Image 1 (tube, rainbow, N blue to C red):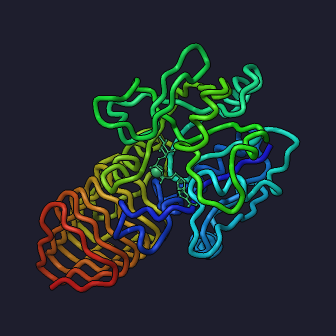
Image 2: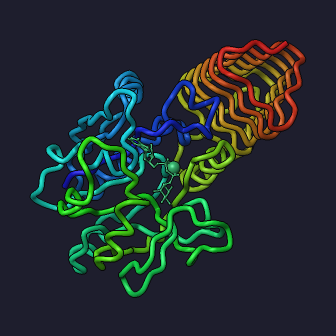
Length: 351
Ligand code: GDD
Ligand code: MG
């Protein structure tokens, strides 16, 4: 079976971190989101993944080379300066997907434990054109929301006004689609599958839903991204290799990638996710934070509840408070205090 991964969006809500990388390459506990997605697909018998991206995202993926987990990986690229939305890329990949059998389509920006086999079974059993994975959330208004009757979706509304949601069941961003779907999308044009195609399928009684019970997270905003890392760390923390503290202290759960150095009397954790080759000085405190690779943190710095981009330098006794996000390659000078929720653009120097 083949899967198409939609990953050509611009992730504007994750700036400044998304200035330098597409959302699908954001690390979740030190592993790119795309790698988690590949693993989930491979475990469910998918053999080929097609990445529907723009040219810049393709460049980043080729550059970073996340492990393919045994999948054959191909690219289908949106035309220059003409993003195709969430439906157009499906039509564009028609030849690669083929018309022989159903295929999976999924949003490349969700972290989810999806039982694709169950999704496929539900699809076949109901003779649907599209079967949507559904999950239950507290506040559904920023998603696609459905009204479900048995297995059939009777209504689909994309991002309804608050208070007017038909239920708490939302589109989890993963579908099984039959090749007839190609007949609902025009060639070479931008199209929103949610706004333009799903309502037509509802009318035809061909849109089916399938609830998923596993973990599901959207990493649309920085705080959701941080929370996703913490939740995954809670789930897999016990399976990770335990660091051997040598002069510094660790408060679990933590995740350490390779090549990390930590100075004496530093306190790391709880919920400190430290990327590859990060250098941490003495008396440093880090908790509830994600530190991207190649960051250098000087003596006495305090980082609590922050996201620190790749290659950032944090000066002596600097303090990064809750909600701070530091763009890649920035330099925070000695004694600088970044107050709550401050954002620093990439490559800036803050004195
Ligand atoms: N190739 C390509 N071209 N991909 C795109 C484009 C495009 O022009 N626009 C968006 N995408 C990709 C994004 O990268 C993302 O992975 C996916 O399509 C969904 O787009 P988002 O912009 O992230 O949509 P959303 O989060 O507001 O809403 C969607 O996801 C929710 C679940 O997280 C909808 O499908 C909702 O119905 C759903 O509930
Ligand atoms: Mg999204």
